[in-house]
Length: 391
Image (tube, rainbow, N blue to C red):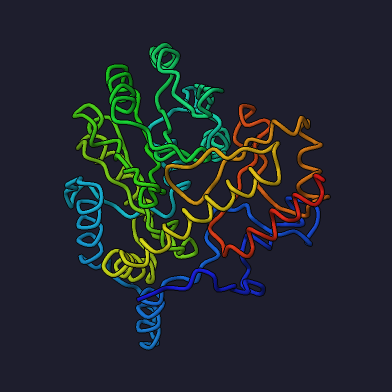
């Protein structure tokens, strides 16, 4: 089947975050929104069909979690990432940021610390801080020659020796940089954290969106130490555009960590999915491969389109080509604008809503995050707007 990713979907009247928070976050509503990390593509018809079938049975009482949910996750993870996950390692979680918050509360005391690696997805900082935990920064290193980030493992090793540092939150693949970390880097992180009793939370929500021939490596698979010091969070929500249907899961190979975390979730009834979540997840993982492959190819071509357009028309902005996800990290430092002027350019002059790079940490100064998970016509309009104001 050929899916149509050029189709423009009118999202007005659906309470979508992408439009609903424009006034609050950007100060105006007449913007083309290319910020929040969901797709503008129509959710795959086999997922919609599965949900409609359940809606035909018009009684929505308490439901059990079907065993097929776990089978679908196990089969998908093994076939796509060569990771043989055991059933008892798995649990539903009510969203990955919520999962991070729950893990912080279970494993990190209020006088203890959480390590993050900016520039990185901002809830990695906001969630621990909002729970009164101190955040320690292990910034990524930007190679100006290659335009790629690497981890500062020497600094991480020193930070991990602090007995109050109890957790490291990893973005695998990295958001906003779109980096797929290599096995050697992840194995060294695992060694540092395992040897210093630091729990690794590996957010792998973009794991099924590897691009341009790259391949995702699950953190827990790189070594036995990695498996024994980590909690992995995953979800079909980004890949299959079902973020509004909470469908996240956790994988915990270590029995001690698993029992502590899962018993707390069970006690608070946080491990039970809503009635629609298993239905959408099972449909995505059973029938979604063809749709996923076509969507990824479309996203790749969108990225190539952005690269070519900027090279031809906007010399001051460079693309850090993502190895995974539909989020593009734009290096706008060539425009020689400070923070306020850069945001004014995008919001008030070009009338575009992108994520300001500094929301991911001060290391993101001069960058913007662009969502290219949208029809190409929309991207062309956005870039035309930007080019017009930079003439």
